Length: 329
Image (cartoon, rainbow, N blue to C red):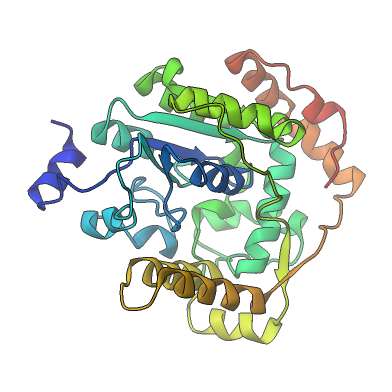
């Protein structure tokens, strides 16, 4: 029996609903949207709590410690599943983890894996912007954050409230040619669906249908495809400073509120989830991200071209437009 499954059974959790597919990343590549679109399907259960990161013991940061070695707490987020054919979860840092693929395979060798990828330049810039919003990133420019990677490998220039230390190595998180084979080798390529964000944005319905077919559920199911997880900035800077000064980040605070809201039974579910959304809305404003300078984009394109070409060969897909054509930020 697989090691993690043994832990569940030893804890008396063997009969609880458990995930049988995983959206493993990458961050800022559409995972939130796909999670929510799948959540609407009648044959699929996706928990309201997103990004538990139960697997991936090497991931660094306070956000990754909420469920680690806590199987009962982890399975509690799936408690509302009611016999759906597929139960899934989305934890986009599993892809960057060197250990998550093996840990998931130990838990369920038959699990289905979905991987979403994006132009690495846009992914890094979007992640930096997200981290600025959440309080994970203290460096005020994207170029400065890239330049600080060497210092950060030695533990410097990382704020106490950082919830995702792993993500501050921006270039490392885009090493897709190292990350994908960990899943291909363990689960087999037939059990791993790779989605390119360009396709997801251009024809969301077609990619959604392909994901449903991959999961073996009714692919004729229809839903709307609204924009999810747009670029966010802090509305109340003083509130961010208060949160950060107390050793938190917005994402960690949001996760704790969400967990309480979706697993506590004294207050109706709808009221609990709306309360969390209200707290986040008070903190947030939505604004278009300023575009990268052409000079920085060209420099990063040149730097990342070998990695992009290697990925093209790995998944048999020409991705040269990622470094040949500047994207819209």
